[in-house]
Length: 329
Image 1 (cartoon, helix red, strand yellow):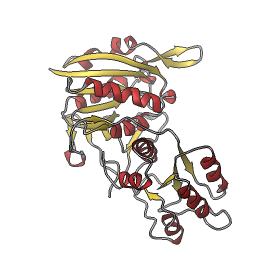
Image 2 (cartoon, helix red, strand yellow; image 1 turned 180 degrees about the vertical axis):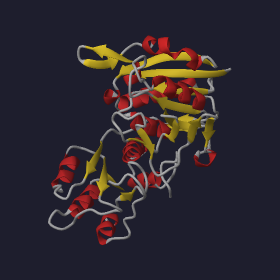
Image 3 (spheres, helix red, strand yellow; image 1 turned 180 degrees about the horizontal axis):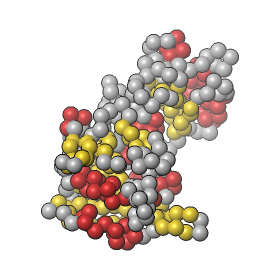
């Protein structure tokens, strides 16, 4: 029988109705409904947080990472029950903090609270437990009978049960009538000792450009003390330099030791800033290209990188390294 640790953090899956709307409740709400889900496993349950995931922030990522690490290899796998709204961010950050993770850590939740009509809670838990017992190392999200790498998941729907998509990478696994099928080709095997590297900098800002964005916002971010900026540029890679000149501002950011990472606003396919003048000018400022990374992975990786070093060349090296399947280089 597989030995599984289930860490609960709150979320819709274990929420109940209150005067102010749905709010997370005690784990018993979830445990009372699990029934057959845990029948094949020896499950240890530990509540570590009781939060709507909108309130899960970098401080909570560190708590979750430490709980996973402290559990060591005493379990075959770990299931983290989590709200859906920021699940992609948590999964991505855990992928970076938990270096050379030797067991499966699987995040899941639901769009409808457990016990409610049409709830997707129990099917999602079934998939999460199956993946946790698979021995496939890494951080994953299990949702709607799909398994997604923690660094490739994005929430793309607010109410649909197929809330998450795997962006620019195949599913790590699917569940059908014949069981769980894992795509081992996209998994990243551990290459060293298991370690917790949970230092981070929360001084990272995500800026989505519009044609009218005032470049002075970069000055404001520098003056506010931000250490890193992720810019969602246009299309395959472009930032305006006519009338609203961002290039000069990016050069000022670099001179002030602020790391700039640029990705595309497009969900699918990779950026390539070498193709157009508007992209090449960006690269000449020393900005770091994110290629096919999601915005969630860019933000968390930059937070994590700045927690390891303030040397901009080392930050660049980190972004030129594929740690957890987050980028195609």
